[in-house]
Amino acid sequence: MKKDNTPPEILAQIRDRKNELGEELLILTHHYQRSSIVDLGDFKGDSFDLSRKAANSKASRIVFCGVHFMAESARILCAERQTVQIPDEEAGCWMSDMADHVMVQRAWNELVAVVPTDKVMPVTYMNSDAVIKAFCGQAGGIVCTSSNAGKAFAWGFAQREKIFFFPDQHLGQNTANQMGIAPDEIVIWDPAKPLGGNAPQALEQARVILWKGYCLVHTRFTIAQMESMRKKNPGAQIVVHPECTQEVVNLADAVGSTSFIVDYVTKAAPGSRIIIGTEINLVQRLADDHPEKTVLPLYESFCPNMYKISPGKLLQAIEQPDRNKVAVPTDIQAGAVLALERMLAL
Image (cartoon, rainbow, N blue to C red; front, side):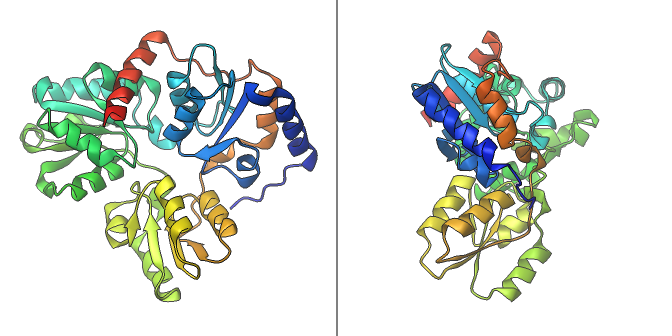
C-alpha cells in the first residue's frame, strides 16, 4: 500500500474550510479511499449508500471522494439545488470503462436479433456509467449493487426468460451460481467478438449472459493465496467480495459487499482472525479500527484510481465550487432514475 505523505497544513486547511461552510458542504468518502481522506469525510460507505445520503442531506455542495461513476450516481439522485464535484476527474473505474454505451448498444442489437427483446432483461451493476444505467431503465431493466444482485436477478427472471448482466462477469457468475443456475445456461459475452463469441443456439439456451468485464482489484486474489494464508493462520476465516472469481468465492468462508465485510469484522468476537479479500485501504483501516482482532489482507490489492483522490485535490474542490462539477443530461438522468427506482422497490 502506498504511503500517504500529505502535509499536515493541507489537512488543517480542509478542516478549517469545512467548519466555515458548515451544512453547506458534504464530503462523502468511499471505503476504498486512503485513511486521510476518510478521516475528513462526513460519511464513509459504499457508492449507492453515499449517493442516497447526499440526496437526503441539506447540503448544497457535495464533494464525492470516489471514482467517477459514483459521483454520477450522486448527481442522478441529488436535487437540482445541489452540485456534485469529484476531486479528480481522472478517477475512473476500470470495470465501468469495459462496457461503454456504444459497446452495450451494439451488443444489445446483436443479441435481440437472435433472441426476442421481450425475453431478455438488462441488469447493470452500480459500477457503470450514467448512460448504461439509463439504457437499462429505458429497456425495462434494473440497477443492482453487490448486496442485492440476487434480488435483481430474481426480479428479472420473474418478468423475462434471460438476464443480460454487465459489466462485471464475476459478480454475475457468483450470483447465478448462488441461484443454482446450471453452468450450461450461463454464457460469457465478449464484446470484441460477433455475438459475444457465442453461437446463436448457445444464446437461445442461456438463462444468464455475462458481459466480459472485471474489477482489477478483486481479480488479483487467487486460490494459491488462500491456501497459503490458511496454512499460516489456522482457524482464520476468509471473507471476500463477490467481484472475486468464482473459484475464490467458492473457497471463502463468507462473501459479501464492502458494507458486509465491514459489518462482519465489526461483529466478530475479540480474538478473531479474519483474512479479507478486498481493497487494501479498507482492510488496513479495519485492522486499525479493531486492534482486539487480527485482520489481515488476503493480498495487498490496491486501486490506483481511488488513490487519485488526494487531500490536495479535495482542498482544491472545496475552494473552487465550479471545479470538476459532475453533470448528467436530463434525458440520461430520467432513464437512470427509472432503473434505480426499480432497484429501490425491491
